[in-house]
Every structure is written in structure tokens, then in C-alpha cells.
Image (cartoon, rainbow, N blue to C red):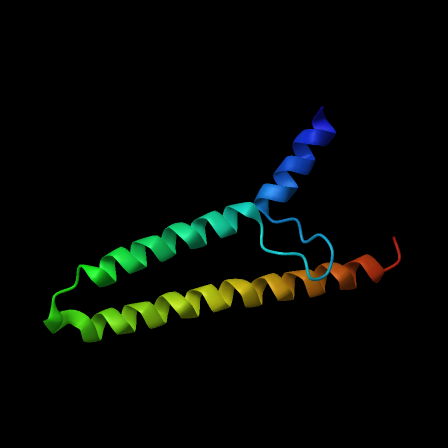
Length: 87
């Protein structure tokens, strides 16, 4: 039972898994919620605030890109450590 709990935690909290594996369930859920909040917020902006809304959307996209970049870096580090011989 403990092994199943660890497996679930790894899946939900971002076990790197195989190279090319997708984002963890938790990260995808947070990105979906953030995207919904960004769209709703952008649609409710008055015309005079659309400029700052576009800047906010750009920041949102930058954060999403950084999450994906961090995932790739984490996988690369995990593969590199996997090649290292045990002490």
C-alpha cells in the first residue's frame, strides 16, 4: 500500500518519468485554472484597460513557458543523475 501511495504522489507532484513525458496532473490543473482566470479577467476589462490586460496575458504566457522549460531541465537533470554510477 505504501508503494501505491508513493506512486500516486510521484504522478501528482511531478515525477519526471520517461523523457518526453507530459506535465504532472497538478501542474496541468493549475495551468487550466490560471488560463480560465486570465480569460475571464481579460473579458471583464473596460476598454481603457485593454493595454494592461495584454501585458498581463503576456506575463501569463511567459510563466507558462517557464514552467515547461523547468520541466525539460528537470528531466535532463534526472536522466543525467540516472546515468551516474551508485556510490
